[in-house]
Length: 353
Ligand code: HEM
Image (tube, rainbow, N blue to C red):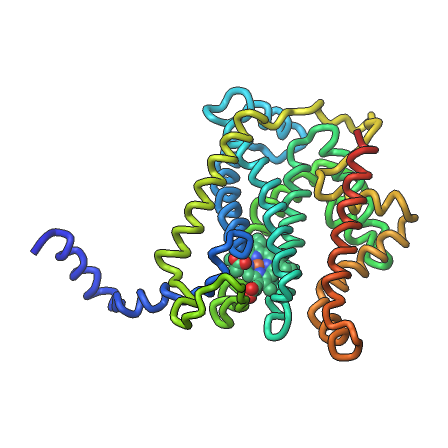
């Protein structure tokens, strides 16, 4: 008996897991259309999320979440700690790519109608994942304690403050007082490094479990093999290998971006000097432009309505399909929505610089 077999027997006697059952569990048949990469886009944010956790833990070793020390600790990471610049670059670019990947995945789900019955709940879980991802981006941006991140957090808290009824409470809860103070940065850090990642892990467990229970939506294309048994392929090793090669390409792209375009460090926050231009990260340009177009409460209420409609979309779409003569209205509504987001984002990008 080899050492390996003996080890296998030893483990098998203590953990009675049948290898056949394990194979069954991992060999989920996957519909053939997932061979096209844009249908397998859900794995991309998952992969990037793991990168964010690993690089985030490494950064947290040197980062110090206090107004006195945060900026200096980020400078130390960027300029002195071994490979600190690389880890910070991976984390920063990983965040950008993750947000882009979540948006692309959501667009794929939307335009293929994959949110329709029975997948309404998973769409809403996905919406919670989207909100968590964007909030992670916002809180992360605020941790550097540069001028822009300081004033970005202040503007963000003021926007929260203009929500009717609960606004004051939300602003105070965010800042730990009426304005930015020594309690603010630790709050952002705890949200960014503990509360939001743990919430996302729990949401992802629910998201993936529902996908396993329901299977992925089946879509068929003309160039498919008509033979029934070739309509699916197995998760292990085929789909896993596709996902791993996407992961490898992403790692190369991230390393390239982190090396060629490392994140810079702007001037340190100065609470007494408001910068001429306050701008958030690119993924909030759309909301920022909206806020500039309409007055405070109107802008907040209309944005709340948009988020509510997005959450409830599977049910609204069902009613449109049942009660109107336009069963595919969602496609046109989606195109108008995407164009509006692009126009507002580009508008803000052009004006902000
Ligand atoms: C961190 C963010 C997310 C991760 C890691 C993730 C992961 C996944 C994965 C791995 C799949 C399997 C199919 C595929 O690869 O496309 C999937 C499917 C799905 N996702 Fe996500 N997702 C995320 C965010 C979202 C968002 C923002 C939404 C929508 C609001 C959403 C809604 C759905 C739905 C409805 C399905 C089922 C699609 C089908 O049956 O074809 N997900 N997700």
